[in-house]
Amino acid sequence: MRVMIRGFMRIVISLLAVAFVLISQAKAVTLAVPGTGDLWLAGMPDGSTASYSDIAPAQSPAQVLGLDLSPGIVLIFSASGLTTYDPEIYPAPPDGLSYFIVNHSTGAENGISDVIAPMDSLVGLFLDSEQPDSSSAPQTLDFTSNRDYLSLAPALKQVFFIGDGLTSTGTQQQIVVPAGASRLFLGTMDTNGWYNNAGSFSVTVNSIPEPYTIALLGIGAISQLTYVWRRRKRLV
Image (spheres, rainbow, N blue to C red):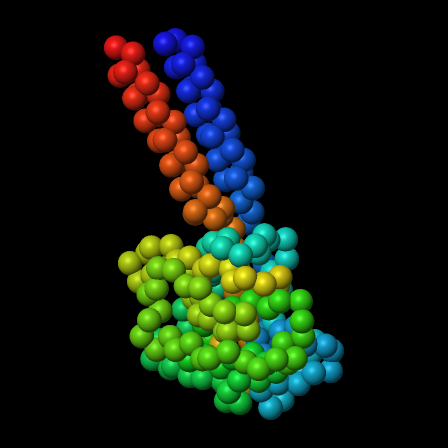
């Protein structure tokens, strides 16, 4: 019996060690996202244009580097700072101007979807390794009233609202990396003409292990415990 219990403990310790390794692999990247970052220039070569008057790389969005973007990985965001679409207008925090909901003036552009979101808010975009204008844009996401999501799984080339990364009650929001993603870009929301925007956001992006992996480890530990308990009961 003691041998069996020792064997069980070794299995549990091994599972916990694997879980610890997975959790320790979580990474955090902090970057500045300028108010001039136009997501419709993401992944486009220098000289490309968007939003009537913006041009790469001057108005290109910020790219997040150093994160695991494997399918199913969960990203969480934390953002602070102020940006404005007009230097004469009082700047807004990452959640943007809740009373001023807009879409991209030129709609889907360069193969990147349109989006409906608060002006000046923090927005994001996943791309694969291809230039985005090599295929058609996905459907528009509307964040007029659903900015309090707990989890969001955007498609490739589909612009999505991030804000400060929290719901209105302070719960951390989660973004699920789509299959095929190899790049993540962050920018600010405007209708057109990011060239005259001002301010910046400081954004920290954390990647955490796929929740299904952690769940499987827990199931494995429970299964081993059940097996040992049943064996012991039969031997009594």
